[in-house]
Each structure stands twice: as structure tokens, then as C-alpha cells.
Image 1 (cartoon, rainbow, N blue to C red):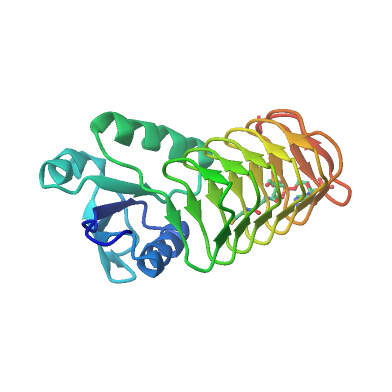
Image 2 (cartoon, helix red, strand yellow):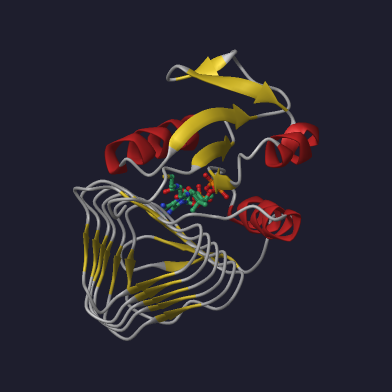
Length: 218
Ligand SMILES: CC(C)(COP(=O)(O)OP(=O)(O)OC[C@H]1O[C@@H](n2cnc3c(N)ncnc32)[C@H](O)[C@@H]1OP(=O)(O)O)[C@@H](O)C(=O)NCCC(=O)NCCS
């Protein structure tokens, strides 16, 4: 934040494990004043000292009280995309959060509502779509294109020019060969080595990654 700018008042959507990591990233980045989290059925009354304020129904009131920024901290890619769109329509700003220990190349581009976690790397001329997550220690090399609300999980390594479709999940610790395209809504299982294209909606896993399922579970 540049000198003279006000710190935005932020609400976090979600109160689970991912929300905890997001809260610490917001604090580390001094990205705003955390006023609370939203969860209709919380496991406890607060998360890392941040109160759970209630369910989605209180969002209009928060907006009218000047809490104008929201970070969608939901692990489900489809849900994060849906809620993020709804919040934008309501008038919330979706700030981009970058943990101070991450490296984002000057030529990289990050969309709104993106979260870049600790020790992640976003390389030269990479782009990260709105509401996507680049999780702890993930490395995106040059020219990657990460889709809207996609999730590159912790400790993944994506070589140059990889394309990841909207809402796709690249599971923890996976590696992806250069120039590979992973389709929208695809899931790459934990610890996989992706050496060939992954069709939209497919679930792949293993070293090298093979198809586990071609679509969502019946
Ligand atoms: C791939 C994945 C989605 C499959 O989950 P699932 O649909 O519940 O599948 P199951 O656990 O029932 O396993 C089905 C089969 O796939 C195999 N399999 C599951 N995950 C695998 C993986 N990562 N790599 C290779 N094979 C895998 C299982 O061994 C099983 O094989 P079998 O039928 O021969 O016994 C899940 O295992 C996974 O890896 N998710 C990624 C989670 C992640 O990294 N999240 C990020 C959080 S930050």
C-alpha cells in the first residue's frame, strides 16, 4: 500500500483451514483491517482472533457500514468463483493479496481476488486469473496462464508456458511439463507428473499422470 492510502476494511468469506492461511497472508501483507469472517455454520466463534460475524445475509449491512472489501477464502473453486461474482455485483472490491515472502515478476499480471501465498513464485509474463489461488511455495514459471478461480496447490512446479483452465485444481506437489494445457474444471491428483494435455473436467493422477476419471463422480 502506498503512503497516504487508507487501509481497507476487509471481511473474509469462509472460516476454515484455507481462511486461516488467508488471514495470516492479509496480516503479513498489511493488506487491510480484518473486521471479521463470514460462515453460516462456523466450527467456532473466531478464527485466529478474527470474529465470525454470521452468514451471507449480513453482507449488505457490512457494505453499508463501509466494509467495502472482501477476500473469498473458500477452497472449493466453483464456490469461490460463484461467491466472488456475487460479491462484485453487490459492490465489494476483491483485493489481490500477495504474501510478502512471495516473488511476483514485474511483468506478471494478477487478477482481482487472487491470493498468492508465502514463498510462491509467479514468473515472467505469467498471468493469474481472478479469484485464483497460488498456494504456499508453488512455482509458476514464465508465460503461465492460470484460469479464473483455479488453484495451484502447495509446492507445485509448473514449467514455462503451462495453461491451467478455469476452476482447475493442480494437487499438492505436482509437476507440469512445459507447454501443457490443463482444461477447465480438471483435477490433477496430489504428487502427479503431468506430461500430456489434460481434458476439461478430467481427473488425472500418478507419475506420469493417467486418467482416473473423465468427469465428476456419478
Ligand atoms: C485425485 C483425487 C482428486 C482423487 O480423489 P477421489 O476421487 O476421492 O479418489 P480415491 O481416493 O477414491 O481414489 C480413486 C483411485 O485413484 C487413485 N488415486 C487417488 N489419488 C491419486 C493420486 N494423487 N495419484 C495417483 N492415483 C491416485 C487411488 O489410489 C484409487 O485407485 P484404485 O481405484 O486403483 O484403488 C485425490 O486423491 C487428490 O489427489 N486430490 C488432490 C488434493 C489436493 O492436493 N488438494 C490441495 C489442497 S491445498
